[in-house]
Amino acid sequence: MSFFLGMSRGVFRAGASSLVASLWKVNDESTVDLGVEFYLSLLAGRTKPEALRCAALRVRDHLPHPYYWAPFVLLGDPRPDPARRD
Image 1 (cartoon, rainbow, N blue to C red):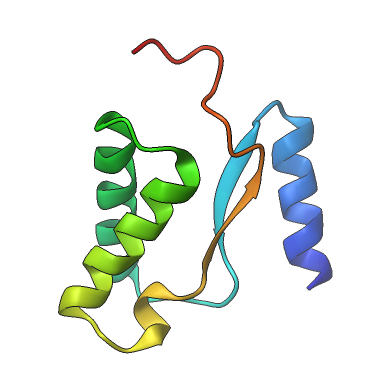
Image 2: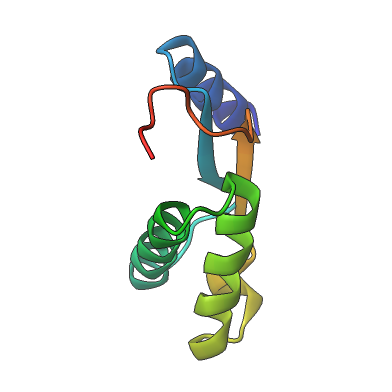
């Protein structure tokens, strides 16, 4: 757990406003699927929390075991990034 906290603290100190992290080691393929769905949802205008939920549900549709979709959490500021241009 301390690695998880230390790593996220480092990302925030480097300037990120938020990050999606995994609470346990996950399958590479499902992580790619979740990441793609997350960014497509963001581009569709969803908030970060909505996009993560949507992505997890999409992964769950074809990989129903929670191991593949449940460990992902959003840390930090859930609001859109100010530098993002819509």
